[in-house]
Length: 169
Image 1 (cartoon, helix red, strand yellow):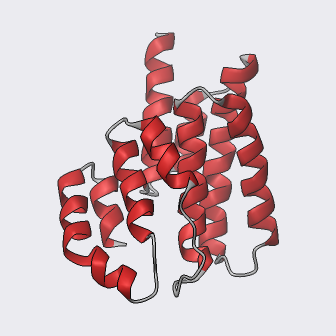
Image 2: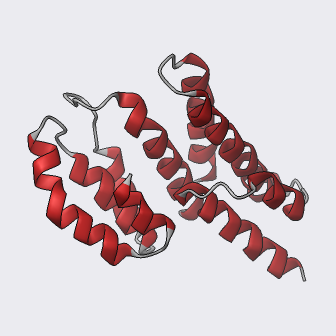
């Protein structure tokens, strides 16, 4: 997705450019509210977590031409990260269970999407349990498990792991 290339490379101006140029056409072709989805990611990138959460929780894929499985994993990942950033750890735990159920029950997710989400949720769960009950884990091992897969969620995980490692030094 060309929009996410700006998010992953931390170039929100590029993502804004893509939105400005293409979002009206994409929405008019049967993908209403897609602007909300992308705007929520930009707000997250800008550290405006409460605004992002408000926007993403009002987003719906109802009436989309795009298959739900294209957008839903990114929505769920964003909600997890937002709950974590806002300190809503119980909500993050519930959302994590919802993501796990979604991955198990979805017939449309590709194996690559499932593997990516499994990896993300595994490391996310470790971060969450550290915050909830101080359950320790190896930051280096968690970071190594992410490997070189580039995504907005993985970049966020790596940033969190790096923060934790520095705070332990």
